Image (tube, rainbow, N blue to C red; front, side, top):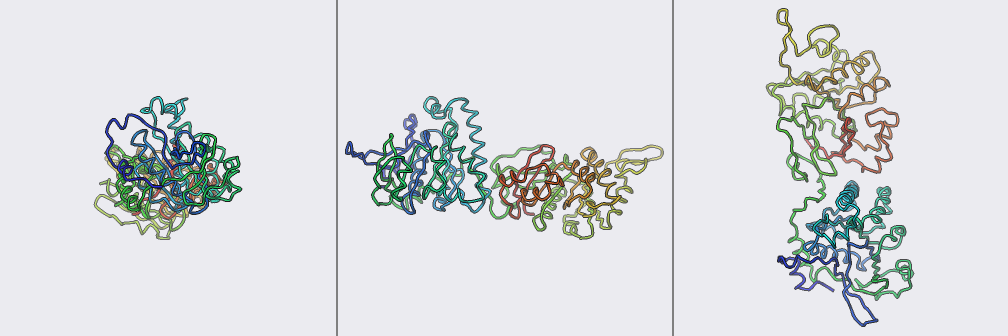
Amino acid sequence: MSIMSEEFDTLFGDKDASDLQVFDVNVAMGIYDAPQTQEQPIFYLNPYKSNTVILGGPMTGKTTFIKTLLVRLHEKQRRGPKENIYIIDFGGNIVKYGTLENVCACFDTSNEENIKRIFKTLEKKILENAETLGSSNYYSVLNSSPDKCPAHITLIIENINSFLLDGRYSTYQDKLLKLCRDGISKGLNVVLTANDMSGIGRLLTNFGQKIAFEMPADSYFEIFNSKVNKPMRLPGRGLVNIDNSVYEFQCFLPFAKDEEIDIFLEHTKTGKNKDVLASFGTELTLDNYRQYLTSSFQHDKGDQLAFLGIDYYEHRPICINLKESRSIAIYGKRQFGKTNLLKIILREVYNNYNNARIVYFDDGRKELEKVYGSNSRAGIEEIYLSGGIEEFKDYLRNTGYVRIRRGPMPEQQVEGNQVVNVETPFTIFVLQSKTLFQRSEDVNFLMSRAIPEMISSAEEKGYLFIFSDVKVVSAPDVRAAFNNCISTAILLDNIGDFVADKGSQNKSVFGEMEARELKAEFAKCSVGDGYYYDVEADILQKVRFLKY
């Protein structure tokens, strides 16, 4: 059965004020046979009162049911509270409907991170709704004061069997169960489709609305807990529980003709939903940077910000304040973007400072030659040191950055018998040297004393340290001193694996983190991905970094 032309018009036609006064919670999904009264009433689904599970074999009507529901919910929100829909499409059949204005996310399984983002977002939404509703039930507030209701949320998982069998999401099964159990009272309902009963038994107790299309005969008793007759073998024909009884029903088609679907989807593609979870393309560049941002970002014009990328979950810019930052440690795999990230940071130095000094300390591998002089201009002094740790130590001593003996600091100058202050350039130390992390007397001096002392006064004196390729610090006391002076850590690697390898021995600033929890929380990184860790605030964010 399909939507008729007059119904089609109502989906697109403007509503006058009188149409919007009354909100009917029910969604028309089909007709059912009522042999007792010899009638065929409309089957109405109430998404505000129960979760819904739709079962059936391939090509029996599950996906059609979901498509019809999406169309109906789109029309429904025009008369009531806003509807936010999140879709996890393990079947690959409804991605097309992701363009609807009330669909906040429609992800397939190609990007693990996107699936995890949906669950994180819904957990946050539930907490926000709970705060808004207080002790009240969403449905009761909807009936008494609909204008005070937050947006209603529908989570749709197409092919729940695949989700439950996918090892990547094993830790999210308990999260799903909690949403099924607690969501209804807070304005969230869950809609699942399943090929069979495999693995869904513990979920089923939280589903008041059950629809079963064609299945093996013995499955119906398990679903409805009663003996029922198998439905007629027709696409879209199934069984549904209504008022404690089970009836045979026929699902509505979303539209009579395929071209109507395309018209509908094009008409509703507004792009106005601020809650949409955008997903990244293959690369994040300066050209497409702003199109991925989902929120405005305000900052003081005096701030010298280096924009590094966008966080995965709220799609807000990740940036470093060059004026306030003291030390940045970059960890990660080879060929995973460390040099690219360094170029991104230094580009902002070139753009924002007329008087700056960049001191490169290379261990002889010449890796920093890729960056040195890449944006040379007047006012930017660049110094390249590659003669080993002794040369770097001598440079700090001879220039006065490190005082070995009494004397003027580098921002001071002796004129006659007086010490006067002079303007010194903003100084960035770019350190990419394995020798800094090896045992020696010079390393102990630099990493335990000299560099921590400089970092402690870095903001005041205009220093920024960038350790662009951090290695394992062998000496425990030196390692502790180094970790304690890092204010921002960036990791270009899978954090769960990295912490399992390094953190258990407390060899990095990530050493106190739990590897197991991190593996459950974050998907594996692709090239261009990584983590931004504000050490002092203890905030960890997964980031898509800009490509230089």
